[in-house]
Image (cartoon, rainbow, N blue to C red):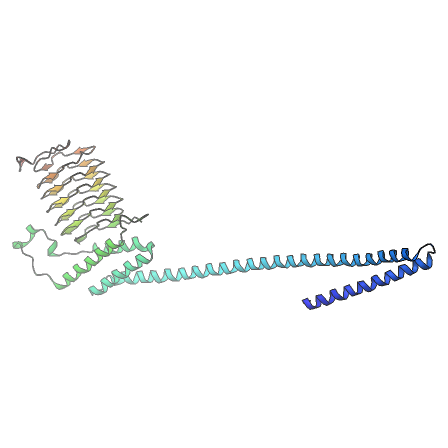
Length: 377
């Protein structure tokens, strides 16, 4: 029933109640005057008024009860409406979750296809296609961080591909000391590998990044040129039997895991100042042909330098060694500068050859028989 109908019903009920009340007033008053001789007109009128008032009161009670039932019904309808709204909201939320999940699956499938296609293109004959595939992988790693380690593994795998270039050959192994003629495709491949190197470094977090993710690098047998991890955070780096051309830079880097450079060859300088090595450092069997600088670096784990060959001077000024240092059979032909560096908790230097000799802050390194200590060294 609409509001207008409700008003008409109320008006009709009120009019009917007034008519009944008047009829009861007249009837009761008349009956008292006729059947009760002792009643006066005033008594009869008062009694009739009470009877008429009772009729009006009954109507008021009925109206109030009806209003109460209407209010209860309205509250029930409101509760039902709220329940329906909640159910509708839950259904909408579930639909949105399903839609988001479907969108996520579509995005994951598209990213997987994009990743697979880029990996496939890394084997393309054209170097520009390979470079484009590398940039596509790097862009995927930036937009989807969960792909970062996988992309780094793929780029490192590309750098581990067999590669032979005269510029990475030791000078004494070159016939006549001159480089032979280099094929153009070999140079293009070298530039493509430099792109892979730059993208690997760009994907690693800066040392000032809060809550930075930790990524590992596997560069075993890779040939690297101007490799730089300056101010980067790295997990574990495995670079067994690598060749590093030009200056290799680790300055300011933070290595959360081990640094394994066993049997690697450095054809240029090593700049590793202010580096934090949280894990073990392995330089066993490595060879350096240029000066190396590890000043102010912190070595929290062990340092393995067995059979290390340094043809020029190593600078380890103001460094700190919290673990053992193993220099057995090491040959530091260019000498070792340990100014301001305290000795490690354990030093093993049997059969090591260091020229000039160092007796600094408790270090005790034996001079090379081939090159005795020089005056003033």
